[in-house]
Amino acid sequence: MLSPMDPDRPPPFYEKFTPPSLEDLHGRTISYLRISVTDRCNFRCTYCMPAEGVDPVARAELLSFEEYERIARVFAAIGVRTVRITGGEPTVRRGIVELVERIARIPGITDVAMTTNGMVLEALAGPLRAAGLTRLNVSVDSVRPEAFAELTRGEDVARVIAGIDAARAAGFADVKTNAVIVRGVNDADAPALVAWAWERGLVPRFIELMPMGEGERLVAEGKSVPNAEVRARLGNMIEDAPRGKTSGQGPAVYWLARGRPERKVGFIGAMTENFCAGCNRVRLTSTGELRPCLASLRGVSLRDQLRAGASDEALLALVAETLYGKKAGHEFVEGTGTNRLIGMSTIGG
Image (tube, rainbow, N blue to C red):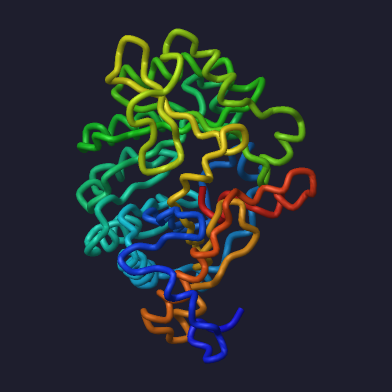
């Protein structure tokens, strides 16, 4: 790739957007940045990581807090308003509360969220809320201890629930749960999970198994469960179709509880209910690669540009060109074996 400031580069690419917004070739406006702060995780979920884990990235290759802040400021300048912090498991990154505070104070960033497994949330919920974190998504694949332990290879769902309770006590009004459904393990648990979440004022969400990393093997074994099947299991708990405002900042489509419109349940169906047409997101890996899609096999290194002394204007040009070319659909290539090369914990789930 040519340098964004290369004199041989044709000029039109930079003229195709006007800050403070970035619209890609398909008319989608990018307003949501997901940043991974580590590839490490204290869980070994069967659909994400192998039992032995993955070789961690060397510390020097990870973005520093100063680099994250600077990149976030560049994105804020082109209209990004929501930043979601992911991993790996973001709470294992030392100083995570400081990073949240740095991002939350950037002018233009109005929403700072985090996706976490909740294992250490009981201790961190208060400090994260005080630092400016606005929303939390917590991975809860089942509230049945046996199923949770099977999917996480031995973890205790009670600790995660304690973390969620601490988050509610700390003042988080918007807490969602994420459940990846795996056939024969937790598919029958969906109604109980929804009832449990609604009792606590949480918004439960179900995510289709994706053929990437360890998930590719499970999909090949027939373990994926379409969202339509999960909704069928919920039966009369939800209405027959979504209505009103059906989506939020991300890809989930929400269905209301039957007779209880104050309750809802979300579905993220990357495989059977494609949401690419409305995608407003882009991803930054913990090593500073900008990836237009979760399924991208490679990205453009903003870290290398930063460390080479690039100006904010040069970073902005590189970001604009990369995102302007964001594809119309996701880049899963079924049956070729390439998806095993895409690590969810590396890119940021």
